[in-house]
Image 1 (cartoon, one colour):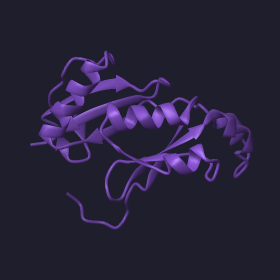
Image 2 (cartoon, rainbow, N blue to C red):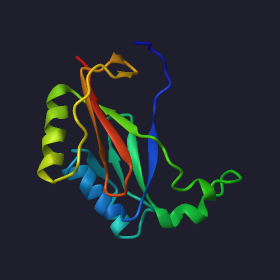
Image 3 (cartoon, rainbow, N blue to C red):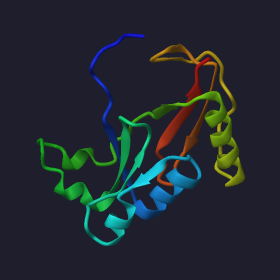
Length: 142
């Protein structure tokens, strides 16, 4: 694996209900919620969930789209389709995630093997959607 200083800091997902999304990512996906109380109290614009010590997912309410004016066309990019976001997990967390999703009747794809990613071929992977239709892949490497 290449040792460099570039890291993925965060991904912003447009969601219809940030509190429901945070609950899904905490209970179904197993990610740590951040700033949920602050969001509920109106002290911050959106909550987040922690993927690892370096990466979070921001759960931005779709109603914020009209304020996205950092570049020309930013408003129109709200909800622009992203194919999927991939979470690489240790094998035991991969199995626990799939079990939690199935317990909650979240549709999951069949298990795939040897899908290529940042660390080469993954041992196993599968796909699922969050309540807002964002597609995620979960995978683990040996």
